[in-house]
Length: 196
Image (cartoon, rainbow, N blue to C red; front, side):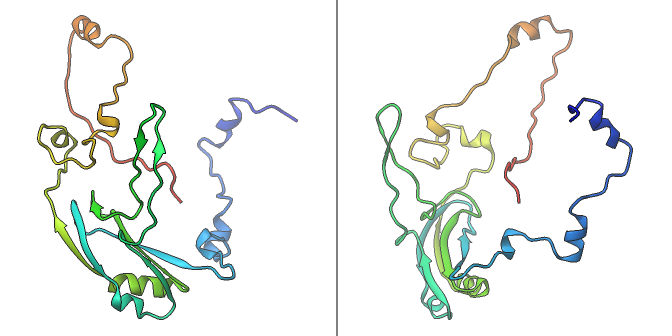
C-alpha cells in the first residue's frame, strides 16, 4: 500500500471531481437524521424568545395542551432543576437550566413542546401564549464591557468574571520598530463548529 504524499492531493486541483453523495441526494435516497423513525419516538419543538433581553413572566399552555398527541410542555417553572457542581477551586457552580425564564438574546430557549408527531409539536408550540418583561439590551460587545452595562449573569458579562487574554511576542516592541502602525477594528461572524 502506497503512503499518501503531498502531491497526491494536487491531482484534484484544476480538475472536475465527482461528488460522491450527489446521486443519493438528487434521487432522494440519501438518509438524514430527520429520516430516522423509531417505535415510540417523540418529537419536540424548542420555543425561542422573541425579545433580546428580559424575562418570561408567564406561559399559558392551555390551548397547546388541547392539541392531540401532545405529551409534555416544559417551561421554566416545571423544568427539572440543574444539580449544583463543585468547581476545581472548591466553590459551588450554579448551572443555568437549558430552559430558563431569564432571556439573554433573541432565540434563547424558553419552552419545549413534546408530541407524538412533529406537526402536533409545532402546532402546540405556536399556540403558547407568552408574556415577557423586557429589559434594555446591549448589542455591541464593547458596550457590554462598559461600567454600569446590564449584566447577563450574576458574575457580569465576562465568563469567569475576567477577560481571557492571549498574547504572543512583544507588541509594544514591534510597534516601536515599525515604519507604519495601522490601527483598525475587525470583527468576524459567529463560528459554529458543528453544523449538520
